Length: 230
Image (cartoon, rainbow, N blue to C red):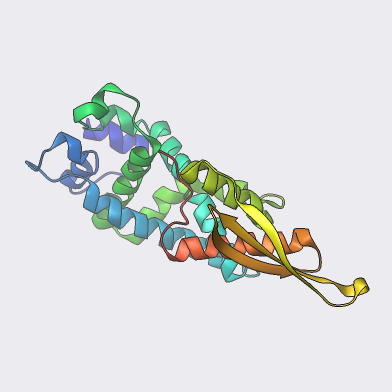
């Protein structure tokens, strides 16, 4: 079994127990053996570092805000879940309880991918972990950075709010400044009456994008920037 998983992921473990642990969900152990939660935690941080590093090296003109948002888009939960399926990790995933009788949620599949990455990092180091990410997530970099996607903050924010709260953010013009020929608009973006961000621009559309960007950066800093779904 381990040999087939290793062929699928393109990495051979020196410590097979790390891979076995990465493929074990907490619902299947009931505390009797190590599960993959700690490896998932580690893998999440390793993935964030690898993506940030590649964005920094490959896109020197990209500012901190755009790098933050592109990292969130690349490590999006459904993308990681799809990668886990393509690698056929689900065929070897030990899972128990009620989860055995229904489709595994994307959040858990995403965690499975991260756990395997964490295991590779412990077994072979950062270079091996980065090779794994590039092989299996490389296409997401170009997809996330194609066209004007990296600047469409309103779409990113709406995707996040719909998946997490089943609602759309609302925008409100809170101020207009300057002479008619050089107006400056200030717009706030809210969800469920809570202001998420405020931005300004020479047009309402520009101000809305700025407000959405501020909201996404704020959500990322408090640990809610990952676009996810159950």
